[in-house]
Image (cartoon, one colour):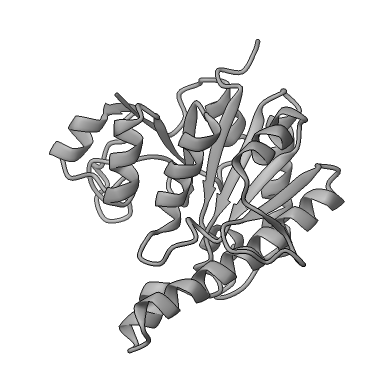
Length: 237
């Protein structure tokens, strides 16, 4: 059975790398995530990853504490570079070839983001980790995922979270909450479901780029999504 998608964009939050820690990176969690990505890559699926930095620094939190918002956001972008480097190194140790491309120029450390080069890496079987968001303050890494997914011609954006999909209510607070298996962009807007931030969601909708929200902590979930199985919540045109 072949995969349902040949090129994907995986959005990983910085918090996903923390595991049960309160800050930083849990190596065991990173190794498990790398294993999930390696499993999908072995199917011949081309994988791009956009990673957040909330486990190290959050721009919005810094701004709320009185810091200049643009400065705080740039600090958050640097945190994503650190996470991307850690993820790429874990992939190297796991036998997965990966490249980090940054929207901020840090040429001594990682490659600059160049769309053509990123696509060539993907075509040659490398995982490409996109760091530093869009390279601009005031935009989230959700928006970076929608943007990079559109630019590289991904067939779907996979948003990895701590819950296994989008629900009618908070499943931690409401035992009767039901998971949406599939929902349209317009339905998600009408029901005010917080799938991604507004800018990212609008970009995916306009580009007809579907989104699948799933739990990265559920073993094998990434593979099941890529195979087109009923995993998480699919948001589509």
